[in-house]
Length: 197
Image (cartoon, rainbow, N blue to C red; front, side, top):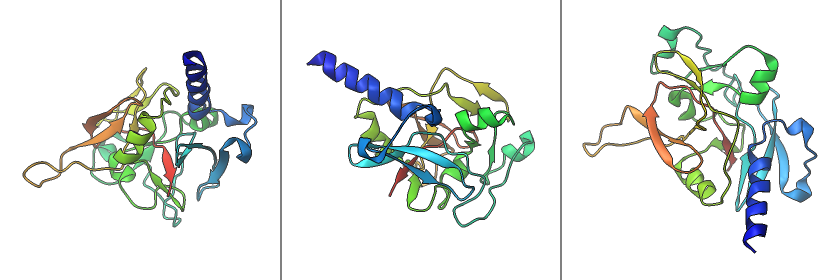
């Protein structure tokens, strides 16, 4: 019985965090589907418990109403408190594999996810973390100073905010590493996963 549970968990891990869906044959009868963002990017999705998750990192350049998200390529622009995104590289294959990198100010805005979807929040991550789904492509990160790294850590933004005991907002925000919620500076750039409403 434990071997079957392990194999099921391993299979789901590989399917959920696989970022090359063109090499897999998904269909709706297996609990998978697709969603398209306003840019026309098509993402494979997977049903886990009562949620439907994107299997790939978000890579949109526009909010779902068509308004462009600011592309922040300079370190000075990256360090502001306004929404923004960038790419680890300009290589098309890397963009497909890793998605875009967003700051928390973008992750926390309405309309970043495709219509009918939202950026995963703390509650979504808690549900997923209890489902034994783990893994992913090595995390990409842009520091608050604008420096890019390709980590061995897997991190994704949560759209949730942190309110301190004095009522003010924290300069840190929650991120999921697949096993727990941890916190990092809101200026850091990380990938985003979305969940169907």
